[in-house]
Amino acid sequence: MAKEQNKNTGKRFGKSKPRDISPKKNFAGKAQPKPAPKAKKAKKPSDEIRLNKYIANSGMCSRREADMYISTGNVTVNGKVINELGYKVKLTDEVKFDGRRINPEKKEYVLLNKPKGFDTSEKEDNLHKSAVGLVSNASKYKLFPVGRLQRTSTGLLLFTNDHDMIKKLTDTGLKVRKMYQVSLDKPLKYEDFQKIENNPEVDGKVVKIESIAYVENLPKTELGIQLSSNRNNIVRKIFESLGYEVVKLDRVTYAGLTKKDLPRGHWRHLTKQEVINLGMM
Image (cartoon, rainbow, N blue to C red; front, side):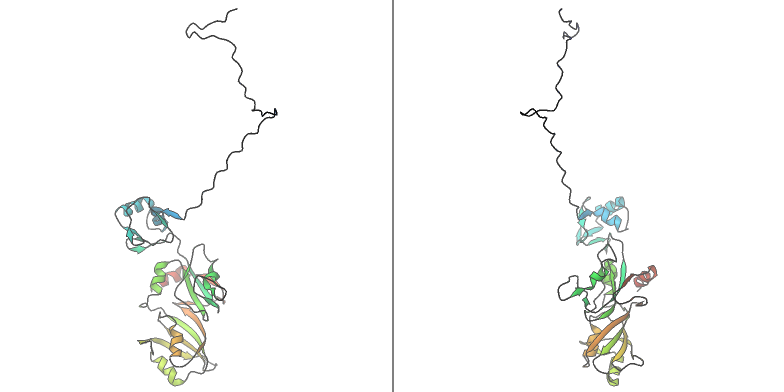
């Protein structure tokens, strides 16, 4: 019998040949396995973030507002005005908002009672150990020491990621009160005691001494001295200028902070009130 045709299309209705959907076979007659999907390459995390996000994370304003400030030239990166929206920066870049340096990290402040044998450098080697390592678990952010404390010295050392605070507290013009306990190689003569008490001159500059005293019931080699100078290594220089060697130097107070309940080698976070007090200096 002849096959029927569709009058409209002219196509024949007939049995269509079934499509072969079985797996392809190799010459041995075995089904070939499907190729494994290619593994996607993992993207390396970028160390750059958009500038508007950097500003927003610092708490200055929202991302949308940050774009407005960027477009009007209120933001600089490493000293250069940036107007480009979508510009990316690294955490190590210096970003300033209206002339003030900002940081997208939460500001943290850690007080360490530094033991002997640790310096304030960021690198450790076979001979020297860095005090930075002692506070490495105190924060997920990188903390920096405020000022210096020599490897042979002990006592209070402040760490923070607040660069404005570091700059403020290390300014030579700021009066940051510090008290030290000093051990000398020989008893301090009373005439030399008076010279120190009357503000000695060291390296051509007068050092204002707030107080100095022999430690009660101890030899005259043990003294306490309080001053508000930010000059590096100034306490040692005072005694060395008079012919004494400082055997031990322990910083017992710093900017109103004390070693109370803080054993040697331990650290603690500052309280909110302590941070406020530092900001009011």
